[in-house]
Length: 195
Picture 1 (tube, rainbow, N blue to C red):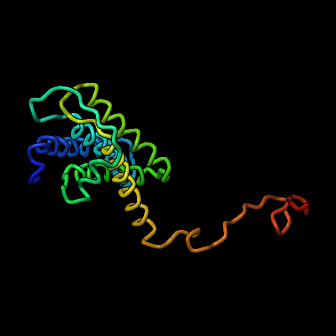
Picture 2: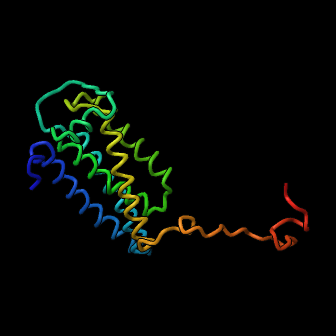
């Protein structure tokens, strides 16, 4: 089903699907019991199941190897992949965090919050790989690619929500100034100009 990634991620993929189904049932029951909207329930389910997938994919090692490996060379594996000495793990890391970014967008998180939280989640996952010594390599490139994947997921949902339209700021529409009682036509208090 996963082609060349089956050996490394087959069991994690099946576990993630099972967890997503179980979480969907749990969230559906809770939504019905607490009269929550479908949109809110879906958003919460997406967040929980994407976090569960991150844990399943990053902490499970299918091979017998034990030990710790740390690679702090930024962009090393990314350049190898771009040069055609392809690393399918780059695509897997990117795809793994797209749902995380989508979940953050459905929770109405901003761009900065999404980037910081997804980078933090990725650093935590890489740190756990190193601490547990499960034979996986903890790489700074994984953090970079995971964060990029989360940003792509966030951007996808934001674009869908806007219907592909640029934001007011991108269209050059001036920001609306909130007026209070006593402000004049320019938004200044009691007719006094701001300096």
